[in-house]
Structure formats: structure tokens, C-alpha cells
Length: 253
Length: 195
Image (cartoon, rainbow over all chains, first blue to last red; front, top):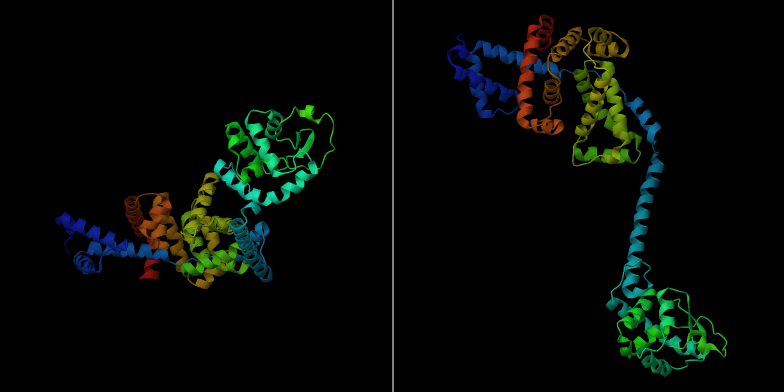
């Protein structure tokens, strides 16, 4: 039988391509017939084909592998441990329970934040003045009911009108630096006219007061809410006894 | 085993289910062992690599990315372990070891189960022939023809273009064919078994 690679290099190249495609599992079905014809015509190609098939079959010949399962499982168990079926169920149920609790907590928190924003205990970043003002306004509505009782105990300022009357004095540059400084320094107590007031209030309200005072708009504090915000800051912790030199202690405000 | 079933086994094994881990081992150990045996030519090395690879994989199942095939991950780790072992002590085909494997202990029992001495000769001839291939050719030929991986998967596994994989495959197959056919003993054995 004539050898195609000696007589026709193109045929030899075609045969090689067909064989490679066949063994690469890429030969289209319609070309398998062409390969079969070429193999029938070329004994050397047929031998090549047979040898290649034998080599591949040998590669696929089964290998009896030793069973390493117990050794592997023992070693893995030594490193990370295995869980019994009951413990696995417990862990699975536990995970679901934890996930449910987290979801429930999140839902409760979001609901609380929606209906009672002030009750939220999330740490907050710096608030804008607008946010703080809104916050102060809401807060004042609550604190106003405490206002008269609180200042009745002080005795110095007993009525809301008194506070209103005091505000123009602040705006006119009266000596309120002491209070201003105390608030700025985050001191826990504020001395005002010889009385001790707690500054244990929300930082946002202090910031609002400072911001309003700094930009000179204190004189515009005319609404009840704004006044209430200032009063809230000055809410007394405990009534202090009157002293004769109270005015000179701080120098008036 | 479908990939979905395999994924369920992986998740169970990751949670500490020993039975699921055992099923994963049963499913993949034969192919990995066969691959490592042909790659290294040494049953003792193949056993060590297979055991170590499974231990590592099962210990770190939480790191498995389900987008990929478990077998690919397993083979990749086994290959790294083999390369590390080669750096320490290059395992080479050793006829004495293979002979010992053919006639020793559980391996003798294993071969007896196959019940064919000629097949053992094929093992020897095939291993000798595989030793004529370069490391990359051997790996590509084994992954493609023994493990049935696709060209694309091998290219991804070895991080090389598909064309390069094909080139290694064609040359490796050619070299393997020549080596096997030039070995009279293996040729006779192959003919006897596979004719």
C-alpha cells in the first residue's frame, strides 16, 4: 500500500490534523468517515492510529487505589473534629435561631428608630445644624412640661417669660462667657448666677446653642422651641441655696 | 455525582459531617490516586500526596469557592503538594518500587483482584513510557486522557493558553505512543490486553 506522506505531503498533513482532532475529541462526526477512509488507504497511518489508541487505553486502564478514607478522616478529625448527627442538628438549629434573633433585633431597632428617633442608640456621626435644630425642636416639646417645675425650684427664673426677657440681654453681649465656656468645655455643671445647673444634656443641644451663639443669631431665639432648648441646657440638677454673693460668683449673665 | 449533590456534601462536610466527608473521599480518591500514581510513578508518593491533599481540602472546606469544580480544587492542591515533594526529593520511576508494589501486601491483593499479571506489565511499560514525557506533557496527557478533563479546563488549571495545552498534548501523546510501541515487552502486554 502506498504511503501518502511520501507521495502527498498535503494528505499527510490532513491525516495528522484529523488524527489529532479525533484524539482531542474535537473531530466533527461528518469528518469521521473521511478519517476512516484515509486509515483504510494508509497502513502506516492505521498503525499509528492503533498505537495511539493503545497508549490512550493504557492510560485509562484502571488503577486499584488503596482505601485511604479512614486515615484521611482520622487526620481531619484530629485537626478540626467531627460533629455527631445530633450536634449537627443542634448547630443548624442554633444558626437559624441566631439569624432569626438578629433579624428580629434589626426589625425592632428600625421600627423604634422610625417611630421614636430619639430612642435610637446607634452611635451617630456629626449632625448638621438643621438636623440638630429639628432634634432640639422635638426635644423641647417634651422638656417644656418640665421647664416650669424645674425653674420654680431655682427661684431665680421662675417663668418662661423670664427666660424670654433674659434672651435680649444675652444677645446684647451680656456676660455669658462663663456659661459659654463651661458648655464648650463639656463640663458637667454650669454655674449661673450662683446656681449650679446640670449640663447633662444631649450634646446636640449644646452644639446648637454654641452654634447659634457664635454666629450672633442668639437674638433671633424667639420661638418657644428655641427658648426651650436653651432652658433645657440650663435645667438644674439640684436646687442650690441662695447666696448673697451669687451675682459676683460668675459675674452675671 | 451531580455538582448540586456534590455541593450539598461539601456543605455538610464543612459543618462537620463525617459521613459526607467520607463520601467525598470515595468519589474522588480513585481518580486522584490514579493521576498521582502516573504522575509520580511511585505508589508511596501517590498515597502520601492523596492523603495530604484530602486532609488539607477537608480541613479548609470553608475556603472552597462553589463556582469552581471540587475536583479542580483538589487536583490543584495535590499538584502543589507534589511539586513541593519534588523539590525535597524528586520522585523518579523506580522499577524496584514498582516491582515491590506489584507483589507486596495490599497492593498484591489489589492486583490479585484485577487478576491479571499482564496488566501489571502494562503498568510498568506505561510508567516507563510516561517517564519519557516532560512534566508538563505528562500532566496534560494524564488530565486529558486519564481524567477526561477538557482542553479549556486544563488550560485554566495550568494557567496557560489552550493552544499551548494542545501543543503539549499532541507532543506528549506522540512521545508516549513512540515509547510504548518501541518497548517490546509493553507492546506485547498492551496488545495482549487491549487487542
